[in-house]
Image (cartoon, rainbow, N blue to C red; front, side, top):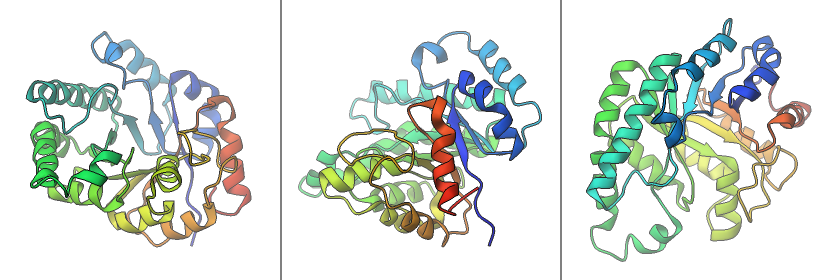
Length: 271
């Protein structure tokens, strides 16, 4: 079986810096310029045009990180849910402009939820209900566009909750993402299972992975090899899937992202 090709998450500046490396292997790319409200509310089309110019000749899969700052997709406030729905629509506008086929959004589940949803009658179902209220229009539009919304774990302690939420839409436009560093934080600091368990829980609902390392204390976004994640075990779990998830390096220091790739390549896990 051939090794998976690593992708990368970058803003325009990083895309320009690493363009040759990306195009040489036609790596999957996640554009990270469009999750800021200030960008989405402004004239972002020149930025999208500049990115498209840099992507000339790129045949790897293209996605964006959708908006997430300052809200949850399951807000208790109906007015906030309307604003979040607008943000999702803005993100899909960007997908249309770039030709992106995937948008990352953030899970609504918190550490507090893990300890309290089953204590409060009906609370678990209400999270799903509010999320559907927020995303219903975006899911319909994504279906029409051929875009997949992938829900990324943030504080999630139980990886099955997010998978069940994604399944509840009964739509090809909603799937699951895993951020390895977030999972390692949850495992080390809040008693969640190890990172590979998140892969097993998702199964073929998994369509996207953020690859980053951490010490389990904070959301470090270190290069693979700089923290405590057991990368061979994680890739063994990924190897059982048939969904071909995008494996996206998402590290804080964009200048050194190729060092993280080289670590995984050196372990014989990817190329």
